Structure formats: structure tokens, C-alpha cells
Length: 258
Image (cartoon, rainbow, N blue to C red; front, top):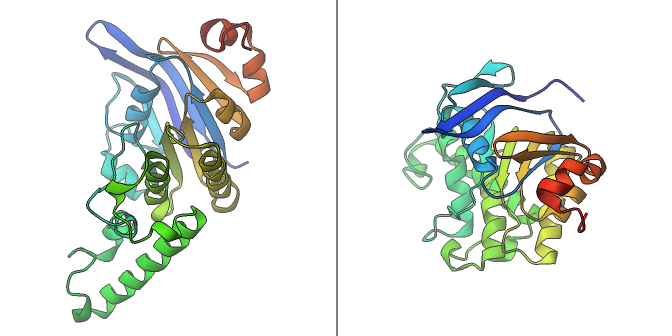
């Protein structure tokens, strides 16, 4: 596997006198699917916020493909290949599923809105065709073709979660951060989600970081698992290694359940 595409080192975040993260290291390589688990309040979303640029750390730095992006904005990171979903749904509910995917690609179109003045510019018409072609491909890969013209705000939660994933990858990502993407999904939908994530990693060389409370789902999907507890990295390794770690059993998985 090639060199790291994402490298967060020595990350520290404080909220007043509370240390949300302390000296946390996390790295990703292209084509890797890594799980991030831990109890509520462990610091998982805070770490996502630091990596994606929403929050600046009090200590440490974040490198994206070898470039220090610690002080770069979320928009800058997005334009250089980083994508993210959120715990709370962030879809454009009054737009169709297709239009949600088109919006995600609009920054490549030279401005003006994806429906603006298309007839006046051959370049814009080309961008429009490219965006719609990519949107159609992603909808097919995510099993959403039949919902293409439905309004995103009317979808059940499992389908809406899949649309969020589709929108995040509509413009091909290099690093994808998924924050509880399986929440509200049926078993079949989780299987589809897993297949899409594996395709991104295996076929598009995308690095994926997954936060998810469904531990069984994480252990099955992820080649590597990082466990946070009280803002510290408690354990890191393969799914089997993490599952067998007594510290993880005591702090998170529960000795009897494990």
C-alpha cells in the first residue's frame, strides 16, 4: 500500500478545562477502510471536525497528501479531495436526489448555477453533461436510480443516508469521512452501503474513515480499527486484534459481550 494520504498527529482539543482529545494520532492510506469506534463522548466527532477543517486543534497538525492543512478551510480540503458526511442529515430536502448530486459537483462548472445560461456556453453544456453522467453512474452504484427524481426530504432515513453517501462521492473523493452512515438503515441497506464503500476503496483507491456505533458492521467492513476513549487512542489494529484487546473489552465492548 502506498504512502499516507492523511496524517493527523499529536491532535489536542480543549473545551475550557475539558480535554476532548489528547495527543491523538491517526493516519490513512489510499484504498484503506479504517473504523473509528468508542463510547459516547470519546472524541470521535471532534476528531472528524479537526480532520475536515471545521475545528482547528489546540495542538498537533493535519497533513493531506503531505501538505499541512491544519489551518486550511473545509472548502479548501474539499476541493483537494476530502469529503464528509454528518450524524445529522444534511441533504437539500427541497431538491431532487439527482439535483443533490449535481450541486456537489457544481464547483467544477465555472459558476453560474447548474441550470444557468447553459445554451450560451459550449463549455458549460459540456460540464452539465459530465455532471449528469457522473450523477447517473453514482445513483446506479448506490442503488438509487428509481429515486432519482424524488425529493430528498421525502425519503425514509435509510435511503436518505445512502443519498448522503452518493452526494459525498458524486465528485470523486480521495479521502472520505463517514459519520454514522448506517444509522437508521435496514440490514439490506447496510449491505449495500458496505458494497459501495468497498468499491470506493478497491476500485477508486479512496481512503475511508468510518465512525459507526454498529460494532459488528465496523469489524466486518474495516481492515483496521482505532478505538478512542476519553479523548485518547485506547487501541489500534486489525478487527481481530481490537476485539481481543482486554482494554477494549473493559472500556467499550464489554467483557461478557466480547
